[in-house]
Amino acid sequence: MKIAILPGDGIGTEIVAEAVKVLQVLDLSFEMETAPVGGAAYEAAGHPLPEATLRLAMDSDAVLFGAVGDWKYDKLERALRPEQAILGLRKHMGLFANFRPAICYEQLTHASSLKPELVAGLDILIIRELTGDIYFGQPRGRRTAVDGHFPGAEEAFDTMRYSRPEIERIAHVAFQAARKRGKKVTSVDKANVLETFQFWKDVVTEVHKEYPDVELEHMYVDNAAMQLVKAPKKFDVLFTGNMFGDILSDEAAMLTGSIGMLPSASLNAKGQGLYEPSHGSAPDIAGQGVANPLATILSAAMMLRFSLNQPEAADRIESAVKAVLSAGLRTADIWSEGTIKVGTREMGDAVVAAITGKTITKS
Ligand code: IPM
Ligand code: MG
Image (cartoon, rainbow, N blue to C red):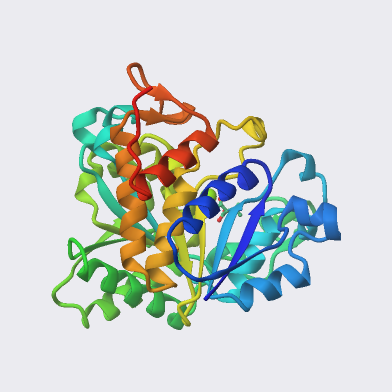
């Protein structure tokens, strides 16, 4: 078993270091190899996703990814920006199925900006299609408009598109995931306006015939954004395309108290996966040792479960995270009156201690 470790930029290096520490105390035999990605790779090798990094990722069973991006690269041409690394990995590895669980831990009910009764016990699984839609659709670019409201003017355009097989395979993923939990899928679209998402809705409805035991509901994306803050617990599996999934997963993250708690898995047809926190590189707090490493640690647990066939080790990590939260330890993003503020490294140490059976003291 081989894991590619790609820490990336900003807080990426700090949080990935904690997850690696946690993986190391599990007494499992896997090989880990680190490579630069994102802005760090641009600095080291002139490209955000160097050939060697891509090869390492493709040759591994799983990739543990930190985060990429920094404002200082915003002026680079698009192909060299850090974000291209994660988009390139998704594309080249064919990581079409993105799982973003949004779980509100009992201990963090009060960290959410919503009323506790709205989020207590929240457990949503967002399944986002990750290699299609307007993110990857061609053609795209800038040109002189030949029609539209201002013919002759400079314009930019992207292409939203989905093929039948792309929708079918992710729909199967969503229905199968729902079978293992609340047996309800909410497919989020914009079929009232967009041809692409009328097609999405039609294909999802067809695939659903193979899953009569799973309830399917269709919801427009604007309504879904509203329902997420109105009655989030009504969702079980929230299933959608690439762009709507990007937006709704950040919204769902806030229901749980902090985006610093949310892991994610991105899988391809071969079961290879890339595991990363749902949050970004947070350059504003990078290097200060205050970032929350729990989303990355929980991503490592998802990796053990989905790609490395070690469900018990995954359980151990998840229980340890609950234990440190119960002991009152909080990084700044989830801190509240009456809890103990800790830094990135202390949080990682506490998870390690909980796994190895040492007791966590409250001060
Ligand atoms: C995410 C991020 C990425 C996305 C960016 C960094 C390209 O926001 O994983 O949600 O838009 O998919
Ligand atoms: Mg996003």
